[in-house]
Amino acid sequence: MPGIAPLACATNSTHTYDPQSRLGLGQVLASLSYALDLTEGQPEGHAARSCVIGMQIAEQLDMPSADRAALYYALLLKDAGCSSNAAKMAYLFGADDRKLKHDLKTVDWQRAGNNLRFMRAQVAPTGTALEKLLKMGAMLLQGPSGAKKLVQTRCERGATIVRDLGFPEASAQAVLDLDEHWNGHGHPRGLRGEEISLLGRICGLAQTVEVFFTKLGPQAALEMAQARSGQWFDPQLVQALLAVTRHGRLWGILNAADPAAAAAHYEPEDSSFVADEHRLDAVARAFAAVVDAKSPWTYRHSTRVSEIAVGMATRMGFDPLRLRRLQRTALLHDVGKLGVSNLVLDKPGKLTDDEFTAMKKHPEFSEAILTGVLPFADQAMIAGAHHERLDGRGYYRGIPSAELPAEARILMVADVYEALTAARPYREAVPQEKVIEMLRRDMGWQACPTAVEALQSWLAGTELATRVDDQLAAMDRLLDDLGSPVCTTC
Ligand SMILES: [Fe+2]
Ligand SMILES: [Fe+2]
Image 1 (cartoon, protein in one colour):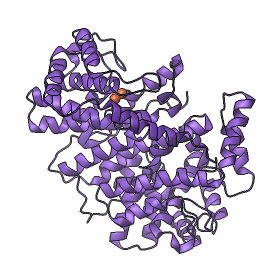
Image 2 (image 1 turned 30 degrees about the vertical axis):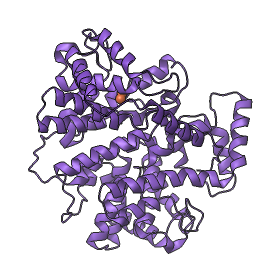
Image 3 (image 1 turned 30 degrees about the horizontal axis):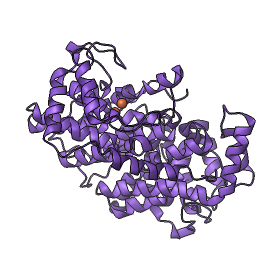
Image 4 (image 1 turned 90 degrees about the vertical axis):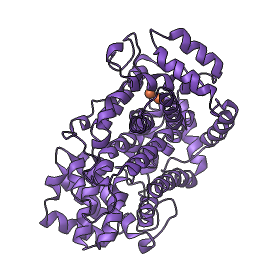
């Protein structure tokens, strides 16, 4: 199972967070962008390095400060919508969505024959010849509109998240235009030349240069940019890139051990986007939405776990500060799932040992990612402990009960309750009463009795129901959409 190497980002946080420090929001997003890199199947730091490339091009163009700020946040969040088409890609190709997304980034799919070659290599890699043929046939039947729809889903979702975070419309537009090409053959709208926003053109060039640089080196990155100048990319931007690489230190900066810190350096000093408490809440909500979009089976898991955990903690007498921290942690507890293939997350049956090993990595990924994000670092251990058990037989560490703080115990119970009361591809939703019964039976050796009591007490006084019928209806709609045949040229 690819992509389960330990994350290095956990080592990034070497300072203690001071809420009065007027930390730039870009520093937070640069660190969190590692989660988006996971979904894209890219090495850690892809978005942060793309940001460095794009911002150097902006400097070369002498771009006004306001535009530079809009570009900066667009570059860091360019992949915010990337999780929204992961399930569909995995389903259509019968392959690991992260590998697909990774490999697709190096293919010039405007060139005749490349699409078919890519499809033949990627479709149902472990399937029979007949399975491959059927998958390819289904995708070819759909034609280019299928690719357009996949890109559209991703770009529109990403732009919505950028807007929700309060960034300028120019940032959202850049994310919408990310996959448009200078010659009009891009997606989703087939815009041509200067119809594509300047910031979108820079983002598109920067991300592709980063992929080639990291995979094949600087020479290959420059050759790719020149070869696609006038086709994928604005020729003037390619010239600006060449000027940057001739006179600047771009390649050296891209090799920095801490790409997030390198990107944070480019946050405009006069930016008004300070990571205050409200913006940190918004960031946690936004990334919870990214996580929940990864699989139709967990499309509101993080937000519901947060709602339940805060409700339980209220009953346990938490003060407002502790509640706020717990809310963010609950929203982000599964951020590591962005590093797990949808072939595993959405599998309609028992996982193999390898698949279960891959699945069990996600709390570790969550902890590693959050450890690298300064304002969230002190909660990273809690997020990483959400699959632990009081008897020490949970994962990923097997932490004994004495070392599990109240926040972790709450999160464990909220997570189990939400997961069991929602449907999964391999089972139906379990009724609320039955879940409570199961949790009470497990009290003392798996689940914390105090937390279970708090859950029961909160459920008794809240409007939150399992809403199983609502969930199943929404699930039906999502799965209907997932099942439509589509082309592979995305
Ligand atoms: Fe989890
Ligand atoms: Fe979870």
